[in-house]
Structures are given as structure tokens and as C-alpha cells.
Length: 132
Image 1 (cartoon, helix red, strand yellow):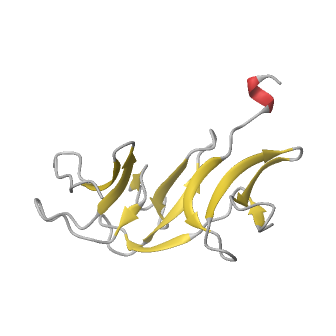
Image 2: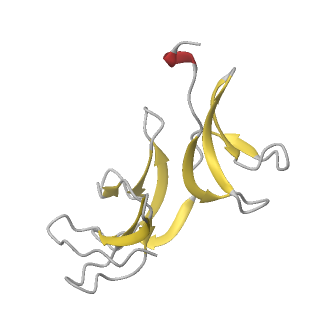
Image 3: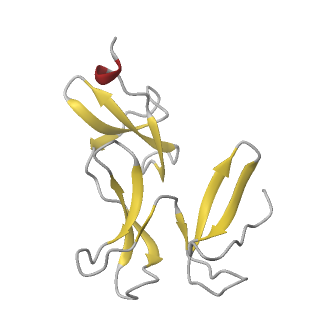
């Protein structure tokens, strides 16, 4: 298969509403879709442009909530639902906790080969929690 007809399932960091396993962006014969990583035990699926909201408030405008979106390249990101009035977005899953170093209202969940840690969403701050 050529690279343009095949897409490895991309984890989305969102639990399946049926079984709580992680949802993945997948490519099928009719295009992109979101399906449960527990297939065939769980056959949950939905359209690729689904919009699961988070309970995290936008730190910039204070009015909107951060919702998960999928870029045209199949990568997930989180953006304020008040777009275009607020253009805040981040590439990592948001956590509704204030940064202990600078006080910014949002931390991000970053995964690495060593484990998972929280980092500050403000680029100027270098806060990183210990690896869990």
C-alpha cells in the first residue's frame, strides 16, 4: 500500500463513551472516522469531525471551553469553542490546574517514553512536573 492510502490509527486521548478505552482516528474505505481502540470487543465509532468538549475553561477569554478538534492532517488539538473571537489553541490535552510556578490557569498533559508529566501551557514558563 502507498502512504497516502494508509493511516496508522492515531490516539486521541479521549475515552470511549461505551468502554472507556481510548478513541483513535482511523482511516477506512470511506475516509476518516473515529473508533474505539478496543475493536472488535467494542465497536463504537463516530464521524471524524466529532467535537468532544472538555470541562476546561479557556484561559484567554474566560468564556469558552476547550474542545478537541482534528486538523486536516489527522492530528488532534484543543481550541476554544468561541472561535473566531478567541483563537487560543494547544496541541496537548489540557488539565484544569493552575501552574504552580507562574500561576497561568492551564497545564498540559505531555507523554514521553519516560512517562507522563504536566507542563505549563504558557510558552514563556518552563514548569514541568515530575514524571508519573
